[in-house]
Image (cartoon, rainbow, N blue to C red; front, side, top):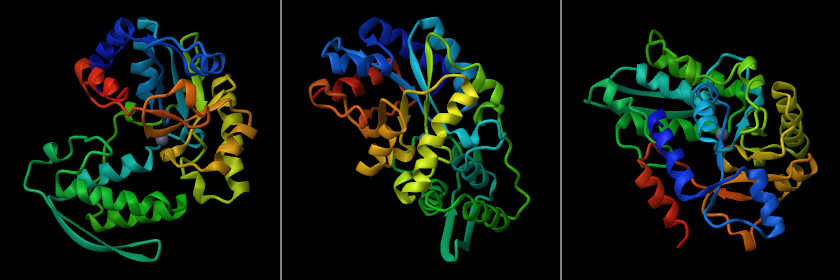
Length: 297
Ligand SMILES: [Zn+2]
């Protein structure tokens, strides 16, 4: 989202809604005192632009927010794999067709885009139908790489790089990387709180209980180490959860958790460990209002 748009969103929310932190929202759900038009803002993953761009705007507007950190990515200086995948495809040729090995399985990849690379590589919202051949190839690869171990995924990305000629080296804006340790340390304030988002961002249901516990409980301790604040909330990576995962999140000491289920929180009938959310796009303030109001119906 463009920073100017985010600024307009904040002004709109301050005017027409009642922004509060998720901690306050959950406390008020329990106390049955949720104000009308309550809204809480969250950011997933731990990108550097959250600290550099979003945090100052939130503080200027006096709107609280929670930032969920993928602790294993903080301070590593390496892009998230899904960004690396997109950058590799963008740096590739206009046409491609090959069969690549993905963890021992052959995967056919192809695209043919006659639009200029800049147009093709315009980011598009996850969840929106891909428009170009390259976007479709991205979705296919994303689905096939998502559940792999980090080692197998790295190998698949390397194989893809080789198939694309091996010469195309993506360039990175510093803001598109995960936070540095210094960024994470400067995050908490009266306005900004931090939450867990596991260590590796792997879909948690895929893990055995012991490994899942390391991800959930381990990330709580690591967020505390990295930021100096013990988190109260958790965001399930990829919105992937089940009842066992939910129980482990509660046992790890978190007080609430958010999913990616698109809905409004219904205070009379809600599970604090499965709070739904609305994923916000690069919208005008009017679009934001319409999308939020549509959830009331
Ligand atoms: Zn995430």
